[in-house]
Amino acid sequence: MSRDQKFFDMYSLVIGVLAVAAIAIYVIAAKMSDATQGVYTRDTAEYQAAIVESIAPVGKVYLPGEEQEAARPVVEAVAEPEPVAAAMTGPQVYNSACNACHGLGIAGAPKVGDAAQWTERIAQGMDVLTRHAIEGFQGAAGFMPAKGARLDLSDEEVADAVQYMVDESS
Image 1 (cartoon, rainbow, N blue to C red):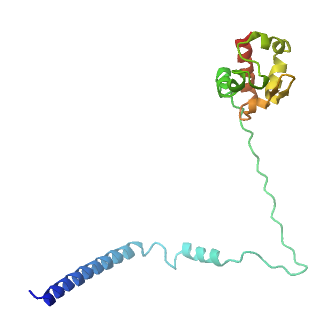
Image 2 (image 1 turned 30 degrees about the vertical axis):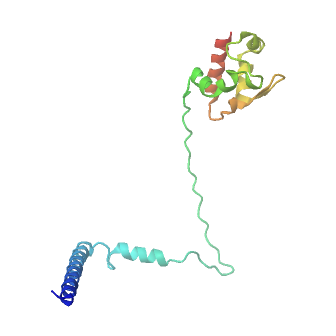
Image 3 (image 1 turned 180 degrees about the horizontal axis):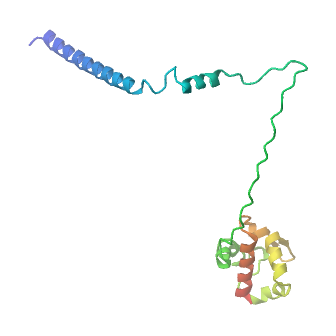
């Protein structure tokens, strides 16, 4: 077989494959157009509304002396969220937030379980301890950030944690 014959055979094969692929693409395109032709045509109201919306002016021009009627404000009533019960218990809050300082006595924080460090504080009363824990406190021994720097905690969760620490330390 000559080299020219091999080239001709290969060329014919490539052209044949391309022709079959082109016919397949044509058939698929024809079926797709038949299936979708009636969906979104120029005569439908949806198409006409889309055209009107796309060519509508962005604003209006008023000449001196003409006034635009202002839109009336709409007042929406916002429902108050229901109060949510404490998500964490006192021990859970202590372990996740308070233990970092009160477990080791960092920054003058009284260690949980050390009754000598807690005696004066407990004598002030639970209301004072809870207020200091929620609002923060700067004392002679150190600094207590508000809610132990965990502002995501509710006041009730912090109060539960204070009660837990007092119970463990008295």
